[in-house]
Length: 363
Image 1 (cartoon, rainbow, N blue to C red):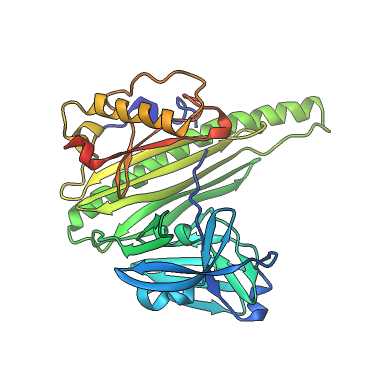
Image 2 (tube, one colour):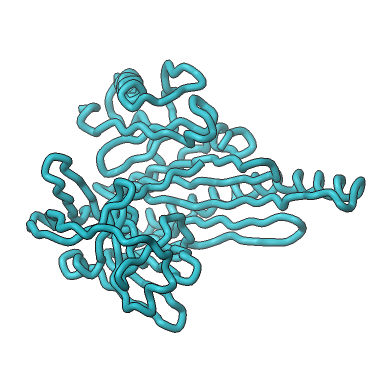
């Protein structure tokens, strides 16, 4: 395995999470929908879809440039199953080796055992609606949109044959809170590689938890001193959370990142993104140079980032010149994603902008 870079240590890097949103819906009986967030009446419009190349028209709702649709209109074509448990008010969506659960009591969403962030359900005419892109991309589908024709395209991504499940490291007490999820691979044909990757990801989770716990303890000691001086002082409990996102599981490679959020009691926390891309033939962690496989990869990436900064009108607090040769990255379905870490080039409010360089640009 590749040794960890110093910049990946949570004691040394500044850490904001990015949430995809473009919606999808789930039809439920009237009494079920009451648990979802209420909304004003929105116009229902027939919308063209291409599902695995088959053209159809499905009624949708658009709100704030976001498309909503009843999941049961697509379940047969997509092979997803949906269940509703009345006692717990829990919606369960299964398919493609994944289980997505949504609580209509508190809008909590879990994917393969991990609590994730997403848009809260809304209801209209006894139907509970959920985000289309948010749901389908996490269930292993590619979602496209043609502006000219208003056509929404959906097709299943051809993924490596493995499953992801979540394990958690959690502890509360002594004035601090810890909740870190990490992925565990199962069902992969190469058991030795599977074990190697799982051991690496567990060790990485333990290492980052240790670093985060050390920082939290410093805040706890500070709170104790503050209370000793002033028993009525207002103190805030520090916390350390970790959530992973699988971004690519194709062509014998697996790419993911973990966002570690550290809150020390101030106005807001900081987030460190730690990405990994594995060669599933060997279990090796691949560098940016190895993935790009082009001697001019740094200049290619720099050119694309500068062009996207200009076209997207990204506001910078520091001028961008070049990436490092060993820059952190992750893969997605369309290309290599480079991101700015928090405060590196943009303000806190701008989060961590991502710049995707299509794979064809390295050929």
